[in-house]
Every structure is written in structure tokens, then in C-alpha cells.
Length: 489
Ligand code: NAD
Image (cartoon, rainbow, N blue to C red; front, top):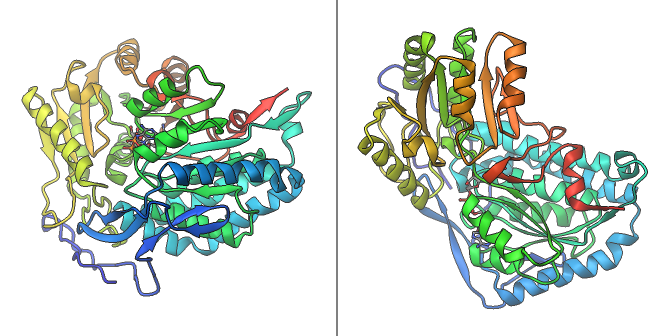
């Protein structure tokens, strides 16, 4: 397989020599099957759907579509493993399996990063430096907790819930799978995981890794399909918990489906984060943080800093620096290590982003975009910002999930707290200031699960992550990420 897109030159300013990741030793299967009870097996109805490379719209592979009977098989095998071998294994042994998964992810990190980039469109730098190392780090971290649950919850008796159904989105496919599977295994549960339909491949490579790590059959099952498969997992009577990451609309419909049952849930949903620059902030760093917060990964980040608030006194200088920095961004082949911004994940997502850009213009905001040549095929969107935005603009209220920034101004601290909290979401926020006291004051008053000070989009397995309001409930990561998988008596 060879890369078809040439590295671009950027407005005559930048002319990096291409540094394309080699695909020579990579083999992507023509067809991927369901991973049930420790084996890869064809879907009973023999239906498949395509996985598309978003940089050239070509089919990468065919993915099995799990239907009702396949979901039954997966849940039954998870139940049998939970009642059988998995609960007989000591916590210390359980930890060894999880460590083994972490180590194999590290060994295969190059292959995993390349596949993540091919399937999802994100720059190789991000898959290589963020997604894959963080996925391994999550397994390492939770492996450490497996035999220490009694210390994590003193004077309680932690017991696993049983079979957990886990449904994940397309923006961090392997990392989201790790966030879900690692704590579930550490706490002694068994798993049925469904990746998003546009990015299933790395979850299936993780299934291969799990097989190689010799986890007992049925402990982890990976089944693929679209929302209808997810819906079957949600409504399966023998599933004890649903761990969902995805859009707020689907999260709400899942909550309706499981209300009145005794299924537990964690919901990691949408966001519309505020990134706030005070006049005393280190402005160059702040601008870099804004770029990192909204443009890298094409804005496909739930905690993307999609609303920027700039204190009026530094507005002009920040806008000038931001526009200058934007013009230096490299959009193009995500397999090129020079690339900052890769492809939008799917045609559908590109249409959503374009819809919001049109709405922004129609509602009277001023648009500014990176002036660059985009590849002819594939799904691309240049980094975009809007100024002259007010609180009532749709681009300031609704999640776009693309590289589109809505910029507003403020004069006082109270004004920016009110504006930042004026959203149904509450996943994350960023504060840029020289004053520690100001950062702590805002951290206490912003209604967001994660608040970064003088940095943005930094993740660590030891730190809990999750939302307020319509961004969901429950936490993943850290000690907090264990209890949603336990009955604590
Ligand atoms: P989505 O809600 O469309 O899909 C997410 C997953 O749910 C997919 O696997 C999909 O197949 C499945 N699904 C769809 N309909 C379903 C149904 N009725 N029942 C069960 N499963 C169903 O979201 P997406 O477009 O894949 O991801 C983008 C969204 O995810 C954004 O809103 C983003 O903010 C959110 N997200 C949140 C976090 C977080 O940690 N809070 C992290 C990443 C992404």
C-alpha cells in the first residue's frame, strides 16, 4: 500500500521535505470478523460494512456487522467467563494479564499508530505520541490497581458488577477502548466492547493483542457494527452496566432505554469547552494552547476548546498572533510527520462541519480560515475561526466537533465565568493567566469536569476525566475510574 497524497507546500511559507510513515510492513486484512469467546468468527448473518480511509475515500477493509444473535453470543460468552474462569483467578494474576496487554501494545505501537491514522485520518504525530502511548499507559495504570482494590476502598468489600457493555466513538478509537477495558478488567468484570463503525480496526487489533496475552476466552469480546448493534448491547437483559462515550443525543437515548432496569451507567458525552485568556497570560503560550485545543485532531475532541474568550485589553494582539500561527499550520497527508491537521473522519462529519460554518456566516459572525490548498479527494476542512460572535450564535452554543473556533471577549472575571458556564455542557475548560489564585478561583467556579491551567488537552491515566450537566456522568481514569465498575458493600 502506498500513500497517494503528496505533502503540500503552505502558502509559499513552509516547504518541509515530506516525511511519510512507511506502510511497507503493514498488513490490513481485507475482512475483519467479530471477536467472541476468544476467537475471531464470522457474523451469523454474514453482513459486512466498509471502513473508509478518509484521506482518499477508498475502502480500507470490510468489517463484520454484529446483529442480535451475535450480540447474544458475545454477552453469553462474557457471562460464562464472569461466572467461570475469570472470577476464579486471583487479583494478582488478573493484573498480570493486564500488564501483558500493556506491553504488547507498546511492542506493536508503530503498527497501531499507522492503522489509527489510516482509518481515522488523524496525524501520525498524534496517533504515535498521544493515542497509543496513552492506551498502553491506561493498561499499565489499572493493572497496578487490580490487587489493591481493598486499599482503594478501605473498610468496603469491592465486588465486580458482571458483564459490562462498552460503546465508544471514533475520535480516539484505541485510547477509548483502553479507557473502557482496562478499569473493567482490573475490577474483575467481563466486557463486550463495540467500537464506532468508521474506526473499528484498532479495536480489532486490540482483540488480537488480548488473544496473544492469553486472556481466558470470553473475558473481552469485541463486536462491530453501527448504532443498531450498540442499541442491542444496551438493551440486552444480561448486561449489568453500560459505559458509553459518544454524543449527548445518543447518551440521552441510552439513559431512556436503561431507565427502570438495574443497569449501571457511565456517560462521557459532548462538550463545548471555554478556553479563557486573561490579559496577564503568557500570550504566545496561550495561542499555542488554543491551536492545540481546537485544531489538532481536526477538532474531533470532546474537550476541544471550541469557545475562546479573550480579555478585551489583549484582544487585538491575541487575534493577530492566532491568525499568524494558523497560517503556519500544515494540513494534508496525516501519514506525513510534518502534518498538523489531517482529514475529517467521515463524509457525514465533514457535512456537519460545513453546515455550522455556513450557519456562522449566515448569523453574521466574521470568518477567517487557513489559506491553503486542500487535497482533491478525501474529507478536509481548513482551520477556521469566527470573530464578532455573541452568546446567542449557534456556533457558540452547539458542539461542532470540527476545527471551528468561536471567539468572544470579556472585561471582568465574573463576566467570563457567567459566559463560560452559559452552556448545557460541562466537560472541560482552559484558563490562561499568570496568577495562580485566578486559576484556582476559576477552577472552583467553572462548571466543567476538567480544567487546565496554562495548558490544554493534557491527559494522564492517574487523573479522573468526565463531565457535568449534559456532558455526562461518572468518571474515567484515576482512582475515581474504578468505582463505576464495582459494587462497594
Ligand atoms: P455517536 O454518539 O454518534 O456514536 C458513539 C457510539 O455510539 C458509536 O459506537 C455508535 O455506533 C454508537 N451508537 C450510535 N447510536 C447508538 C444507539 N442508539 N445505541 C447505542 N449505541 C449507539 O458519537 P460519535 O459521533 O461517534 O462521537 C462524537 C461524540 O462523542 C461527540 O459528541 C463527542 O463530544 C463525544 N465524545 C465524548 C467524549 C468524552 O469523554 N466525554 C470522548 C470522545 C467523544
